[in-house]
Length: 453
Image (cartoon, rainbow, N blue to C red; front, top):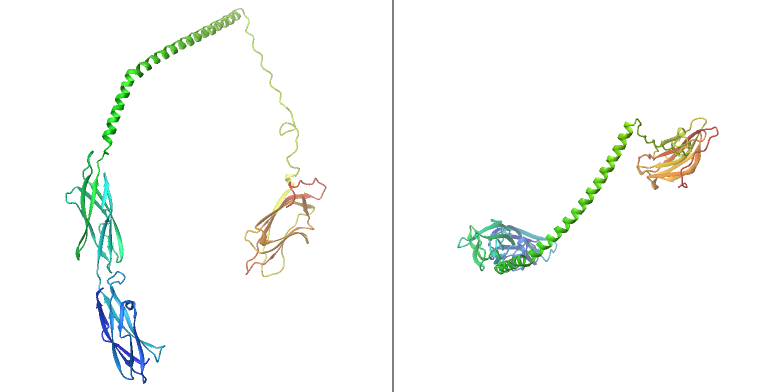
């Protein structure tokens, strides 16, 4: 850069709404005439001005410019230190510039405004108000809210009582006003009060309020009471003059009818009891005569026991088992596998029946709990009976009407080829259920109902 820049003052102090300035010197150190542009960068650049903003300098000459700072009296300009820089750019070297730095200190100020909403409340017990306090200054401050009433007839509750006001914000304070005494009847009473917002540095800000206290009983309650008394008197007179004699007469008639019914029912029950007593006496007399005459009263013959029924059901006669399969020949087992993904060959796991035994398989359940990838085969010896991809299932079951037969020469073989990524082995398994029967002729086991899936 072909310019030298210097600030006469690098530390400045200004109050919001006022102005402060400093002098900047620009010297052309190049060998040609140059045109220079001056501006202010940094947080203070929004309310700074350079006069003149441009200058033409001959080689080896210098000129002064005035930088003026005018921060507005607003909460948008916070109090404190702000750095700034005066930038000088030459036309001969547009890509280069010189910046001389300084600092301006903005002084704090506080401006408060308060408003009570609503100004008037109407209540029998407690009036609700809200005090809105605005801080239009550029610094945080704490105030105290003090409500008072001149006649000492009210009680107050303020939340919060000492709010912290941030710059450029409005704070809401809840105010509850409660009369110390209440009255039953009469017109509304006006109880004025005042709320003061105070801080140590400045005088208080006051807001006037009013509580219109209402009577405990509404104005129409005496009329309602008189009407209620009149209704009670009228109903009482109607009762004693008309309703009570009618009710008493009706009650007497109903009591007489009920008494007659009870007497009639009692007479019928007494006659029935007398008849039963007479029959019992006759029976006792006959029994006594039989005993004194040497003969015993005849004994009642015992009832014949019922004959048990017969049948072919369980416990009633001969019957077969629920299944034709012999439980002594039932067999089930699980074949586990472990195949490495690095080998492209099938890993074989075999179950071989004992000699002179034939394995009849009716159910197969394939299990892939780890979600391995690859191919699984179920073989009879070298013959592939089932083949499926491991990616297609986690649990897969087969049920056969006609069982699959395996022998010692053609055992059950589970073959797995693993294609897992990395070195994770494949560990699927297969569960088989059926019967292990001798080679000698025997009844074939029943297969599970339903077609093979």
